[in-house]
Length: 240
Image 1 (spheres, rainbow, N blue to C red):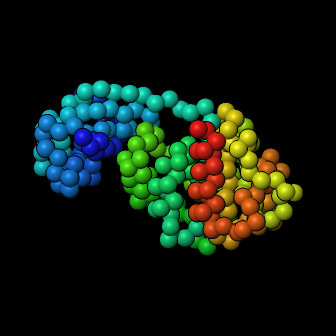
Image 2 (image 1 turned 60 degrees about the vertical axis):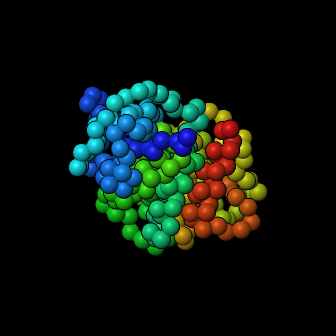
Image 3 (image 1 turned 180 degrees about the vertical axis):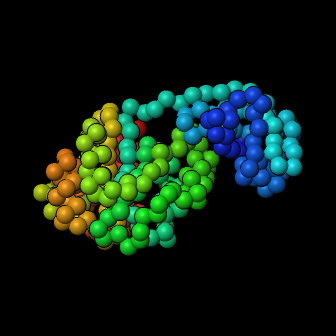
């Protein structure tokens, strides 16, 4: 039997009567044409999942009956990825893969060499991309998504609260590579990736002064989204 389809139900709506509305209900009722009596999976993005039976399908909503629930605690090692804001060409792909690789937080920050301006607020499409990734891969937790509007100065200040912090630097790192040991130990880890144009000297100095260690992923200069996903992939592998 195929796995049940997954849908998102916001934490403040996770209560009797369990009702799907909006885009999630449209997807269940109109796109997938799921009928009463079929089983679905819900997630709230904060670690809670459940199996539900569809009790009633309406024109704009669906009522669900709970069968079982499960809570998935936070992992002992949590990675925050701070990505220099870049063009939108591959951002949706990046967001989906970040959920699959269990990023704890995602921050976009305005770099000196960013080729796009950081928006005033998070885009609704970004959350849709995160939800799509979570429902596809079964991750019960959505990354906390936020904008670092104060640029590298704010990012450097935030970095001080982490147990370990690294910047993926294309310049001289003294031969230091990002290592599994850096990513496996419990705690909060910050991973900083620059935009398309890389880090400016000013940004490198400010981040290094805040304790963000420059590390390398190898001799090639990678696209920002390649470096970001490779970094999350290494962190995911280190936790296994």
